[in-house]
Image 1 (cartoon, helix red, strand yellow):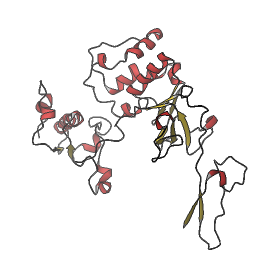
Image 2 (cartoon, rainbow, N blue to C red):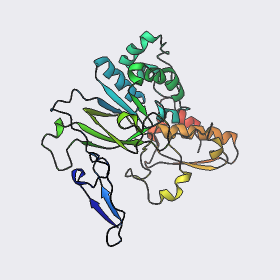
Image 3 (tube, rainbow, N blue to C red):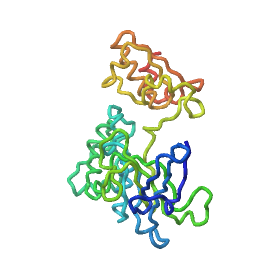
Image 4 (spheres, helix red, strand yellow):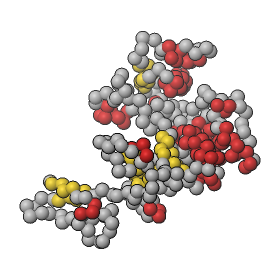
Length: 316
């Protein structure tokens, strides 16, 4: 198979387009398949000033929505690209978990000012919400404000990010060039994205923005299991048996763990939550066994809390 790369201004065009699409004969004289590669030329805004372009925020979770609130107050245009079907989709995945941070540390000051005129009642500052409560009480209300909701695209995955007209070898003027984002619909489907220009459905589309704020978080890209932060060899062969960092052990995923042997890898707060839930499950479901694997010689990060809750609750 042979690939012929063609510049967009020289591509074979059957529809008189501007280079965003092209056609090529399926076979050449030798019978080999010929593929024409097309670079979608992004329009470069006139002039060096970036003030007329919006800011891109990746992720509509707690940080992304707080960023949006601050941009609204400052009168700066923006777009939010959320991979899930709704705001705070990643938080919803661990909605059963109770946070260790109280409401006093969760509500952004500017977001509070924007919500106040809507009659929003702020929860007790000392309470510790679950992820589901964080969404229903705060994030859904904040993301539902017209000034923010009108600028959110859900079901959108941002893949490559670059600077307009800048490849890896170019440095001069790089800081003045706007950002170029390429996007595609999230595999899970749903959402409001997938539009491209004018909302027309497309496999991929691009946007030019003045600045980029990555608030995508780590829920969908957790730390690797191996010591160097990458996945161990052979993981793909047992991927179906590996769960997320915060499984709903006592709820929706109970049958997956009940009466079985589970290994928890890690010594952070996510591991502590999983261990506590598994210990409770073991007390209710005979045959449930737990192995705790950590890299350090002692579980200092988990077991040294002042009230000793993880140490008292988990018996391995």
